[in-house]
Structure formats: C-alpha cells, structure tokens
Length: 482
Image (cartoon, rainbow, N blue to C red):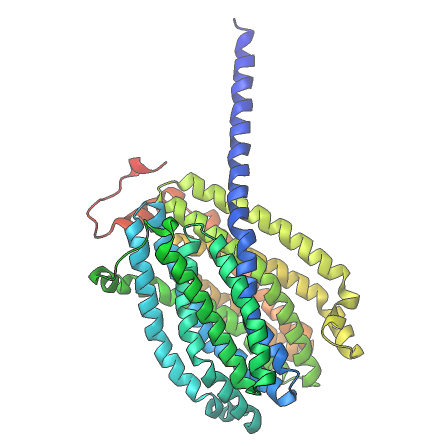
C-alpha cells in the first residue's frame, strides 16, 4: 500500500497540471473568439476616414492637406473624446453582465448614448470655428478654410459615431462580435462607392467625403440598432428608457471623464510630435516620415486594441461574476497572445525595412529615412502592444482615474520632454522625437505592469460587485468569490 501512495500523488499532480493547462487553453480560445473578429471591426471603422482621405488626395494637394489637418484636428478634439468616454461602458456594462445584472447593461448603455450626444454639442461648436482656430495658430489661410469646411460637414458624423461606440461596447462586453463584424464590413463596402460618387461624380470635394463618412456611420448604427432591438441574444440586456437611465448618468461620467483623459493624452502626444517635426530643418521630409511611422503604428495598434478589448471584456466579466482567479488568468492569456503577435509583427517590419518606405513614397530620401527609423518603429510597436493590453485590463477593473495619471506622467512628464531634448537638444531630429514617444510608452507600460502585478484580485472582485449592486440592495460578501 505504501508503494502505491507516491503513484496516487503523482496522478493527482498530473491531473492538476492538465486541469491548469486545460483552463489556460480555454482562456486562449475565449481571447481569440473576441480579439480576432474585433480586428476586422476596428479596421473597417478606421478605414472609413482613411479611404475618404485617399480619394481626396487624387483631387489635389489643397484638398489632401486640408483634409489631413482637419482629420488630425477632429480626431484629437472630438473622436478621441467620444471614443475614450465610451470605454467607460467596458467597466460598467462588463461588470454588470458578469454579475448577471442584465438590465443594468441596457440602462448604462442608454445613459452613455445620452451623455455622449450631450458632449457632442460643445465639440460641434468648436468644429464650426475650425478655420479660425487653425489660422490663429499659424496655419495657411487657404488650407484652413478648406479644413474648416471638412470639419463642419463632419459634425453629423460625430453624433452617429457616439451612438455607434456605445452599441459596440454594449455588444462587445457580451462577446457578441459577429453582428459588429458584419455591420462594419457592410458599412465599409457601402462607403467605397458612395465616397467615390460624392467626391468625383457629384464633385462635392471635402463636403462629399465628410457626408460619405457620416452616412456610413449612420448605416452601421441602423444595422446594429436593428440587431439589438430584434435579436433574441440581446433580450436579457435590453432596457426601457426609464428614470434609472438618467440616474445612472452620474456614474457613467465618473468613469467616462478619466477614461477620455486616458485616450486623449495618448492620442494627442503623437499629434504633438508630428507638429514638432514641422519645426525641424527640412520639415517636409521630417513630417512626412513621422506621418508614415504614425500610420504604420496606428494600423498595428488596431490589432493590439482588439486584444485590449478582449482583456477588458474578460476581466470585467470575471470580476463582476466574483471570479478573481479567472480574471487573473484572462490577463495572462491575453498578454501571451499579445507578445506572440508583436514579436511576429516587429520582426516582419524590421526585415522589410529596406522596402517599407516604397509603400508610401518613391522619393529615396523618404525611403532611406524610413529604413533608419524602423528600429525605433519596432520598439514603439512592442511598447504600444504591452500598454494597449494593460490599458484594457485597467478599463476592465475600473482604474481609469489611475490610467489618466499614468498617461499624463508617461507622455507629458517623460515622453514629450525627452522628445524635445533628443530631437532639438541633441539634434537627433525625427529619430529623437520618435524616441520620446517610445520612452513615454515604455514608462506607461512599466507603471501599468507594476500596478497589474501588485493587484489584489479578490479585492477587485469585491469592489466590482459592490459597484454593480450599489442601489440594488444586495451587499456582496467575500464568500461569494470563486
């Protein structure tokens, strides 16, 4: 009998190991089921504005430059604000769904739509004066006037974008991704001929591009709205427009404002670096190469944002369900996949550095400069990938206020000053400016990683359930945690 005891213990250990790996494989499958289709969703939505910009480029330099400046201006002052505020739903709806408080998911979504539409009003007023603001900061008057027209015609898009982002988060936290994929691809397919017709056939120029973007967003909203209203999948989470919707607006703003600050601080830092590139010797070359680097990192970020969405969804759901161990395992699973992805992506980009520039320009100065910038670009991709996933964890836990302070310190206490010092002080030009962004993303990743590693997941689960059941009358206990 004694000789059998080690065998029994060994069998138990093997079963524990197999169970652990089985659970981890399950987490990986969950991550992939959310992240992979979300890549198509985010890419399709991103391409709406890119396609319009590309078509305007065939009209002439004035149309392209004015649309590019207007796109940058509206991204920083409007779309980033709405996008960031909508991320609050990843905390509120995600944890409510995990706690099986399904009606609160619909209530929070209604609150988000109302709040975001209200926020769009002052942003719209700002966009009306785009031309005057651009002239005030020294931009070319002719370009500023055209950029102003583009921004004004883009105002309806902001309101439809606000509703769209709310619906996307509503479906995302329920892991209902396929309808978003289909509606986003359908909207992009609708956008391509519409944009071409309005710009080239009806000769509406910038106004036509803005109108095409707006109508494509509206189509996406209609398709998702019909799905939410009539699909049995959303039956449990559909809510009526009641006083609870208005009472929940305060809680939404509590998480939406720091969430918007997180996003705006990060997005604006890249735009600041592009503007600083215009102050360097040979500004056309510097800004062109920095813009190319920004385009490449933005496209790659769409992939990592999808992993970020998976992280926030799984973490918020598990914390709301009172499963701290599952939330921690989800973080590890997303990080593993994220690391594999950025290793592959950065390796491919590095080995393609000699031909990468030709995708954007035939000028040898630009091609060679892009080749020199590629190592810094790869570092940026690695750091951005890590911080994207960790930011998703922060949203899932409800740490937006911490994330806002982290991003402020990372990009405006470290990143931009380092960029100024390296770019202008040490005369490293574009390489120095981009290195500042890498430094900022590195600090951001390190701080978020430390916070995540030191997290008491049991405490986070308790806080999540208190947040969900606040006002319901049920007080969660430690014994409820799995």
